[in-house]
Length: 387
Image (cartoon, rainbow, N blue to C red; front, side, top):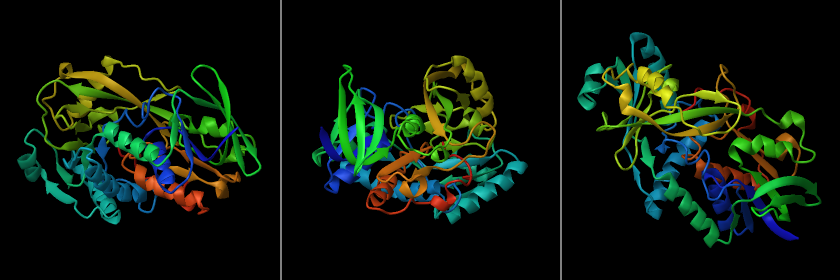
């Protein structure tokens, strides 16, 4: 029976960053991924933003890890030749009523050490982005975009160079605690079954993290969170990009698909919108474009619905359900669930890619025996999600 120091389940950005961190520390690592390649779920189905960490509750996992991860990602990408661009982001108040909300966001950002934020009045926004109609705005200069595919490819290369092995088209079918670790049953793409022994099991399975944890023998039911699926569709804009920066409107336009982003090729897109679903599926419905266009008109009245087409969709695993306040990420170690050697990552969505290197550092410390970080705030609400 094969034996490794640690098995990492999930080859998304977070799983690969963890594998990289542990392998470079001299551990024997096996990564198990159910898909044909890396990053085919949450990590590749987003808007590729390097988030600033403005929106999150100070001291929360998302705030701390995003802030630290942002600078780590920029530095890592520069060192490894992965393309990024600091486009900047405008966060809009669309009315006098929204101004109070925006002032709260500004204070949150300062508490989260986003010291480069600038408050802009309507006239200042118009000079930067003439097409935008708003009451006031915050400019976040450190927000940017990145090439997530090549970022993950670099993580994978680092991990493999350090000796990590990656098994694609493979799925964990059973986990049994044994003396000194776990026996992990793995089904390969041809149906062959393999058992692997490991001292540490890291559950970075994204949308399926709770399902995997539930199948670990002896895992207490009380430690298993309910994971909800929020599907979001991204819409390509057919035409010259109307803005040179990323744009985030106030609610409800934000959640209805009104966010504008650019990719590194200069293509503009809007979204994601939000649709709560019961299963992970990525089907596209171009009929949702009308609702997205209505959201955009809160700050750009000239948008034409026919200029939008559904391009791709993603599903974000969340610990809160419809109509509930957002709940923060949970990095869950043995002190929280009682299974020595097991680390579960629950609800890791945006800004997970931005935070991936910082999350990997935290997990590496947990492997060394550190308690679950942020355990005292894990069941508290975050301020709001940052798409």
